[in-house]
Image 1 (cartoon, rainbow, N blue to C red):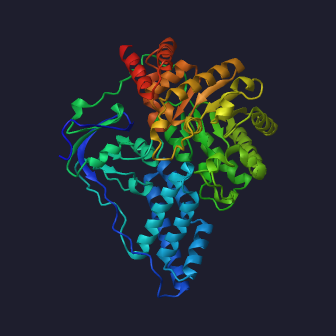
Image 2 (image 1 turned 60 degrees about the horizontal axis):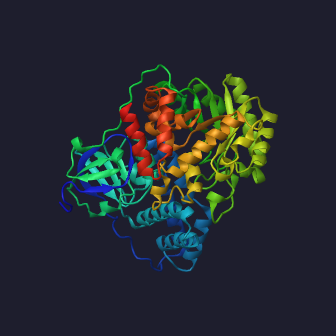
Image 3 (image 1 turned 90 degrees about the horizontal axis):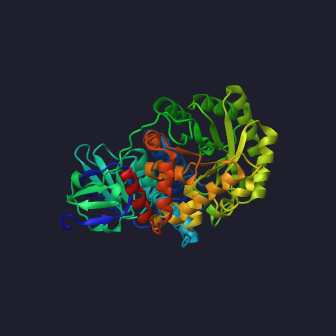
Length: 542
């Protein structure tokens, strides 16, 4: 072995199960042709480029259909990047200067990357663009970029990171994933979690692993152990439901009709805590009519699990581009016009969406709550609340994703009925760390004391204001952390369909006093490692 048996490689774990397998290091693809000037006409090169882009787009569609769920949503966003008109026009100008189609497109992407270089909020988008560029160039050159993976055996893939197109090609032989970079909300982490593949990300020392090494992927222990077996795995706490109901409601996150149907059929979710409406529009070239929206919303509301349905109004922008909104290029989109800020230029669509949701609510008889994303001030919360209440008869709330509104929750008394915390975005703004940046994963660990204490202050602010406080971010999918959230005073949690049962079991295995005791011990920690250890040790004793 390249490393001594028993060597521990630290990273950030994804998932609750461990696995043992043989390392397969994913090497870079075959080199692409060097960029050169063309011997063909510019018209021929442009036609070839259009065809290559279409081929890659079709591949993304196929992979998205095969993957489904969250992964399919990622492919929709990637396809939008691939078909960006400004990018194609820049490639055309390069071709007009005599470059080949591959060179023209590659240079265009490099130009975009150079403009965005050094900005951590764009690191993941640049990486996605470069991956798409390679795929376009490979298609032009006749180079196959598909991963060649065994169909049988037990393989642990090791690589710097994996694109969504890579993860969609994982076979049943892939029992674990290790990445040198990436964080808990990277594409790799999200997809591995949704497919229940144990993973450890942000594990730089894995660069020393070699093909054939046997490793234990131990996500609960945030580590990889060379030569390890399952007996060394850190055991996740097995929660046994002792009570019929959890101490706080556990709801489901959905984005599509299939999500709603799955949550109803396969879980005991108490309604929906996050309906991501923008996922219906990621590939829409034109704005849907009110009638079209009413039809979509009615179908999804009717299919959703019993209980309140919390609908987030459109959260376009940043890494969720919606074509028909024609949003301008921004140097820093995560800090730009996204979420409720779209009301500046797209007020009519937000009003149409609220009108459609009200019609769907009346048609289905469901209890609908609506909330606006990216609220930064009390004044914005009032603006949305007045707009929503003027259109529909639903409960009205806002997302808490910015530190500014997190500090003002106690001032929302009489303004909104509830707030919901998006811990993914709140973490990135709290720690000034883009949640898609592969180099900043440790700062986005939900056990960070800074985040936990902020959540405690938000819960306290909600209690003072007399409004409920939910959490719908990735952090709630960790059953141990869900217990901490209940102890901090959070009113409800909402998680992906795959995590509803395990989180419900955790919150049904103890009473609220136990949750508070555990939360108090976690609040005393000064590092993410200590916070997690405090929670797990306290749970083990109970």
